[in-house]
Structure formats: structure tokens, C-alpha cells
Length: 588
Image 1 (cartoon, one colour):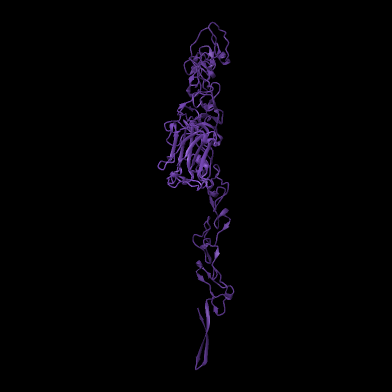
Image 2 (cartoon, rainbow, N blue to C red):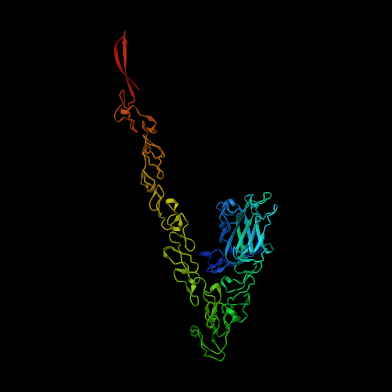
């Protein structure tokens, strides 16, 4: 059973008022009704004892402190920790000794209860809410002249509770009907200083810290002092009655009385019970006049008003139903009703596919409440046309494999689903991240973690870095990486390919290159593996080749060698102050 009550109070104050239980919607297998609605077409509203009519209505407060705006107090969140951003704070720096907050309910309501959730996470909140008053009024301007429902006397020792519940005797209003609910507080002042007394425990300036304000009236379909009585079968929208007396303006077909809580008397039916039942076996359905147990002998039709099929002493009686005229041979004898499940001449014809296994009409073979799911026609003998299924054949088949039609009763696909679809009736797309036959294939690396097409697996917005192909399952070809695989790898060690996503060289860089992508040559004056070797003394003080270490323009004077790293000096030998020999010596 389902109890979809959108107006159910969030706290424990009204747990003695249970919502009406209503049947789970018949269409639950193909979709669900919005909260608070039920029925095959979601046409009915749940009847909850109380409804919060302040929820998400227009609000106002006299000054907003720290951006804690007035609408936070009607957002449906009763958390009393103000640090989470769901509380209102009314305080006016230009008018510090009074403030107020109000909600516009949008129209006049008979208020049954008010609940106020004050902030609790700040110890100072207790003294700041001292002196609060609650009003119900036709307008904000008239609030002080009417509808005072609660007042805190601003004692130094007793403060309003953190969860203020006003109902029954505690909702001390002489007038409980109004459009506005106002919370007001002020502070006494000492002119001309304009300051409040200092020997008090309540706060000096006026503040209202409200985490939620709930205003309750009887929900649709309920009435009475405690909203614990259920309306009768009113014909008004949502089957709603007067919320004080329970009286209905008019009744639904088949019901009578001031509160529409009495079924039509036996033998009558319809609006106001003004219609007379036909020639039924037993009485007729009070709502539509149909004869659920069939007609008396000689009468036909859903309401048993057609016929005189066999009248006493009249062998030539008129027959309205041409099918029956062909099936029956008229005689003057009365006859008994056929046993359940058969109909027609000599009760020789079996009933077809009536809804809920009901028996067909014993004369016509028609099903009184319609056909079972998957069948149609006057006598429910025809299966649903290809592509449809279910009750009255109004449901469309899902994406069955190879375009096959689904089962006419259940909607299941006999050979499974088309690529990209799943579920018993193949009406659900593959869940995010999967596609194809039986939704068994995982999506590739789509850009920005997008999901792929649930049928073909194609990434509509392209691939993440490092991947290519329409399904983004193929890594970049060796030597390329990054977005759309258009960037060339750097000089990786031994000519290895770089990482196809980041471009990093996992095995390190080739001689003369550095950094993660190996695209930067060694800095000035270095070369070789890891750029750890120093260049020699190249001509004009230029740097060497960052890979080989060779000086392209030769060596500086006094240096030679392949890498210009050998220094030439001249050694002189003297004997008795005479130069006897000179030789060039190379130092490396």
C-alpha cells in the first residue's frame, strides 16, 4: 500500500493522525505518479490529515542578517543547525529594537496548527528569541489588532522552546482564519539613550532566527477539529468537503446524504440516486447502473434495460441485439440464467477473456467490466494489434529485437531487446556507461566523462585525451598523444613511444633531452644522458651540441680535443739563465 502524503508534518507532533492508505497506482510498472497523487492516470489526490500550507510560499522579514533570507524558513528543511544555511535571520541594523517575519499563504485558511523551529546551534539564540509573538491575520498591517495566537512574556528565566508547537489550547487565537502568519519581537528602550535594560538575560536587540515555520490546515479530503475525519464521496475536485462540517456541495454518482457517505438505496443509481435500476438479477451498481450479476431472463444490455427477449405469451418479441436474434429461436418458454463462464443458446458458448476472470453476460457474451489485458473487441476475443499490449491495448510495445511485436498481454519481447535497450518490456535505455546488445558493452573514454550513445556506443562530443575512434576505445598510435592524438611525442629513450594520454616518456629521455615529455634540449653548457655532462671550451664561448657534446665552431684558443676539453701550455727549460728547450704540453 502507498501513503503518498505531501503535506505530512515532518516532526512527531501529529503522529496520532494517520494518512489514508490508497491503492498503489495500476500504472506503477511503466511509471509512477507524482508525490501526493494516485490512480491509473494519477487523477486522484491523497487525503492526508494535515497539509503544510506555508511550504515554499512568499515570505518577508524586517532586515536580513548575514544573508540569511526569509525564504529559508519555508524550504521544508527543519534542521535547526543554522550553520548549514537553511535558517532565516531577521534583524535590522537601522531599527534594532524590533523586527518581524511573515509568510503569505496566498489565500485564506482555517489554521489548525503552527510549528516553529528555532535555531539551536548558537547558545545566544535562546536569549534572542525571547519575547516572540505569533499572529494569524488577514493582512500584515492589521496583525496587532487581531489574531494574536502566542506571546512570550520575555522572562529572565523562561524562554520559548526550541520547537514551538501551537495547536488546540496552545493556539490561543480568537481568530484562526487568515492569510498571513507573522512572528514579531521587540525590545523595551530607555529614552533618550535608546538602549535596553542591561540587567536582563534576554538579548538587547531584536532578532528572529527561524529554521522552519510550518502552518497546517486540514488536507484535501479531511475535515473536523483534528482533521481526523474523512470526507465522503463528494463530486468536488479532489473529493474535498467543507473542512469544518464535512458537507459536500454535490455527491458523486451512487452516493447520497449531506456528507455523501450513504450509498444509493437498492433499486436506484446515478447522480442524486435519481435513476432506476433495470431488470437486474439483484440490484444494480449504484454508480453506473450496470447489472453485475446479469439480467433477469428476457433482458439484455449492461443495465438490463433492453429487451423483452422472451416475454410470456409472446413468441415474436422484439430483440434489440441482432447477434442474439440470430442465435436464439423464439418460443414461449421461460429459461434460467446460464452457469458462470458460458452464454448463448443452450449455454453452449464459452466466455472469452473478461477482466479479472469475471463471467461474461449469460445472453450476449459481453464482459461487464471490459477485457483482460491483451484483448479487445465486443466479446474480448481479439488479441491486441501488433505493437500494442495491456489493458484496452493502449500501451505501446518497447524496442523489441528485430522489430518483433511484444506479447499482447505482458508487453515482454519474445526475442529480447534491440541494441541499447533493456528491461522486461525493453522500454529502458542502457544505464549510463553501457551500450549495445543486452547493454553488455562498456562505453569508451568519452570526453569529460560523458556517457556514450546507448545504442551504438559513439561518443557524441569526442574522446578524452589519448583516445581516438568513434567509440573512443583505441589509444593514440605510437608516437602521438593527447587531445585527438595530434601531438607528437618527444625524444624518448631508445625511441620508445610516449604515454598516449600525457605524453610522458616512461623509460626516460634520449641523450640531450629533459623534462617529462622529453621535448626540451639540455640547458646551455650541458649535454648527454640526463644532461649531466658539461660542454668543453667551444669557440666564442658557445654551447656544445646538446646530444653529442661536440663544438660545431671548434674550440677556444688554447683548447683542443674532440670535445674541446684539452688545454695546451708551453714548457720552457733554462740552464744558467739560457733557454735551452721549449715544448708544448697538453693538459686534459
